[in-house]
Length: 319
Image 1 (tube, one colour):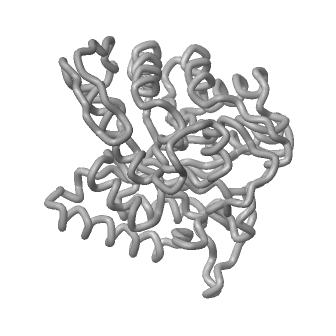
Image 2 (spheres, one colour; image 1 turned 135 degrees about the horizontal axis):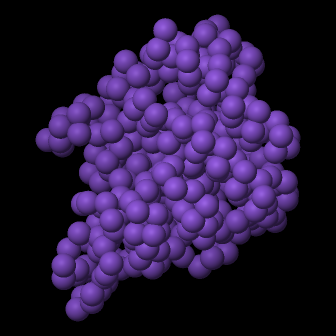
């Protein structure tokens, strides 16, 4: 099992000093992933329902600020030496696919092969309209096509593509990414469509456990969804074991306990021993990558939360 944490791109900790401090401290503590969120603009009025909390509202939207994901990713590549750089997630339809493939390949080369591409289709119609990309209603089809564009550009010597949203031929696409065949594609999402995308195009499944429509915040719920994913893979003639498993639990707070409607404890809440027990339980199901948020009210508290997890929880996982 390996572990990662999210870097703030919005709010009071989204500063050069805080971002570098969090990244360097996480790397020194042995975390393997830095997760970088994605927004290009924050509309002043958002009617689109946010998928990952019961209130269906985006937290902190009124602040309006957001650092650009790929630029920050490149900056962190230079600020670190070994920790992996994870888009968490990149909203695939938000950027021209050829440009995105080039940017990700460049970061992979300059970071010496440390890029992992967490992929999502997006949830905010207003942001799609503001940046002038294909319609929100077509985001699933756009995402699937763009991911195929990435793979074509990253792996083929004479890349050609003819699709509904992208077309190119007679081009050279160099340098290729350092990683072969390409940087891993972790497919986010919990819906049936997301599971189909994992099977068709992904190297790993990367859900968030807090989607009220598709909750994965207990071991039992996650196991049931994993069974559906593995059945979908088998139906598509893909070996389920070829799909890596990662999981994001951004709600983790040390000592905080939450109870689910059925009376059971919510995954990754409770005592250190209970959280370590949850890590082991997901590991038994095949999960190899766990991501958390240690962002707190200020940098000092955030660094302390990260250090405490590494020093108090992780030693219990093997016990």
